[in-house]
Length: 224
Image 1 (cartoon, one colour):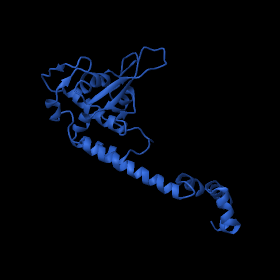
Image 2 (cartoon, helix red, strand yellow):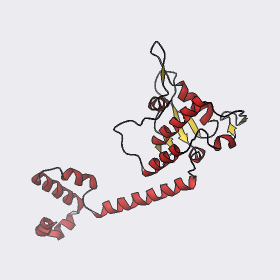
Image 3 (cartoon, rainbow, N blue to C red):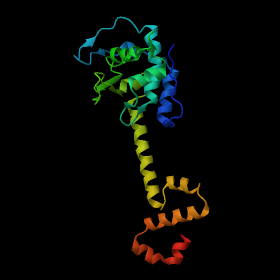
Image 4 (cartoon, helix red, strand yellow):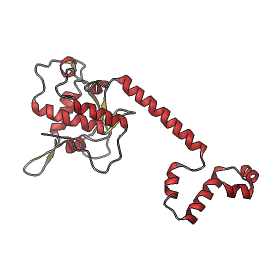
């Protein structure tokens, strides 16, 4: 059975993504009531696609895994899944190999193109490539319906984004009030005393204007 295995040594995901992944793991997204009530739309023609039966167990297992993978790689600001279909397939155990060693990601690509996209859970856009190959990778965007699979509304997402903007704004204001950045503080903490002093002196000189330095004077500057 396919299972999503997050890549090792990657940066920590946001609180919202962790929250969404927890919600998605607590509910069977492949047997969700939404799968029966939403109308499947053909993305090419706009026509309603009739559905006569629920997902078979193989595709249901694949969906449970890939939903978590898409969330893990989702940029919540743009709803873009920052991973290729091949990467999603590899991390979910959906990639298969023939006897001759040829790799196939059909299980993942068909799940996306034949179910998730027609049902309106994702939107795919072809990405232009400079490669001579005929293979054109897709950009995958998660829709509000995708998050509704595990009962996260668009208003919840908007609230999180609003809080993040406020937090980022406050952080930038704090950084403006100090003469040295948080990243520089981490660097300085690892230096010897002489190197750290020189680094701080340079930061102070760059922080103040020439006229401000004149007013502060040598003694005032030394205290700072």
